[in-house]
Length: 473
Image 1: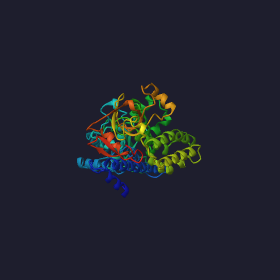
Image 2: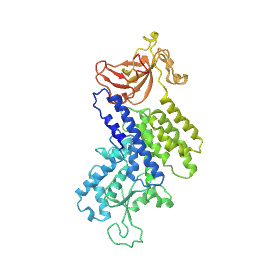
Image 3: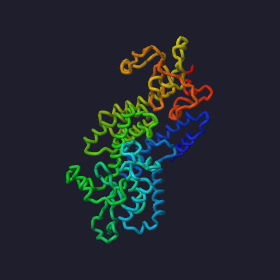
Image 4: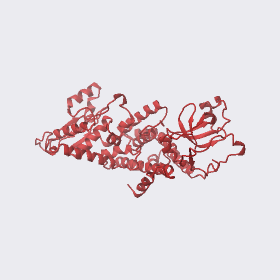
């Protein structure tokens, strides 16, 4: 990590009782997150440009969009894989004397003994955490999709002298282990001009070898075109594996966001916003197909990417300027993207105009900045960080939200609030039930630093960090 990251990390580790904790921690974590994402996109850009990027680095890039530990970087996964390989060597001291076939089986057997055995509850197959290499390595149960499991097998096998890579098989990823030049998988000598023999492994399901005939039977059952067998049974490029991972993440996010009622869902790790944003970045950076198809893919992704930039990831404007704008230089979207980036910069640099409480509004605006409340109807917990004397939303929003059906309608105070699910909402005063509580939801405490300095145990409110905007609160 750079000096700047290290400094920011130290700020985010300040003692929880210090007055600077929640605001310094929030902004330091925000900056570290931005740096993490920049590292990830840089790896995918190198891969796109034909440079060598290892499978583990290309997949760990996804973790950089959701990681919640500021000490993590793109070397974390490598260290954990090194540790697995080291422990395997201790457990199998004769490993180097084994044939490639025996060694592949030994590696799969060891991984399965260390709980790298797939997913216990098949109803949770598409759970979002199962898509991430870093999360799988850190999680005690190591639950993950076959693609991630095979990536772990291949990365460990490569550290132990095997040529192991993921296979392009549809729906379920397998590993291909190739014999070294001049010998077969059982250690017998071969003419160096001969094509090295290969074997297939499915470490997600078993430590045994998977036969070629079994895979061909599965392709036949799928009605795959025999002309495609060579590709489907061949080595998958790192870019292909990144794209498959991105599509898996998007499918998981969509299923979860649908069930949760939106991208922002309470206490979900990894963050749906971060996971989706990272997956779309990957597909934007690593499209596939002819130029017309590539352009079509990028056109589909850019809207979602900008929406997330505007809503959640403001600090990534330089990342867009460096990597996204050049992709659309001669496209109709170029001016729109540039305009969106300029709008964000302008909004972030606008001077703050103080919002005073008019004397006549003292009783009208009942609650203050920093108060914690529970929504009377939906029961979520949130913090007030802004208010309007009456509803200032547009007519379309007012109609969609049914504001006119409220007993007090739109002519009551409305509050800008931050919810435990990371969303920002606009709430009518009549729906606010103030809380005088000793316990603040940890998710709320973690996000409060965007607007507040600290929690005051005496007054039971957050101490405002936006006094310049709301000087009377």
